Length: 86
Image (cartoon, rainbow, N blue to C red; front, side, top):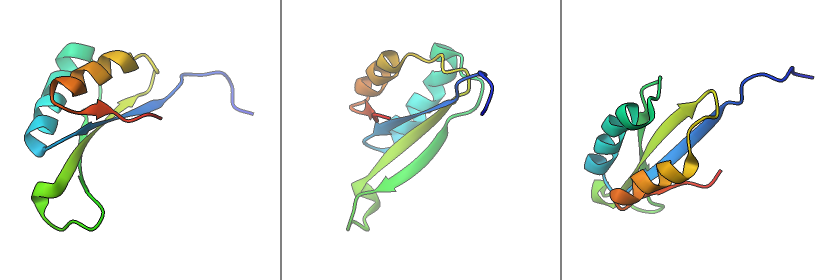
């Protein structure tokens, strides 16, 4: 059985396009003091081949489990996105 250590979480913010995802990824370190660089991932919608029909994900590692989910959701909402529920 693992000892009680740090909680590790992964937050996934869903954004409507690459530009929004890049802006959110740039804001995260200053706003939330994240240590690791967020990852950008293209998430094509099922059955769509056109890049215009893709959402972008910003994946944020939270090794200490200290990031506020509501604040992350608010940030994503500023760019017409949302925080994916765990």
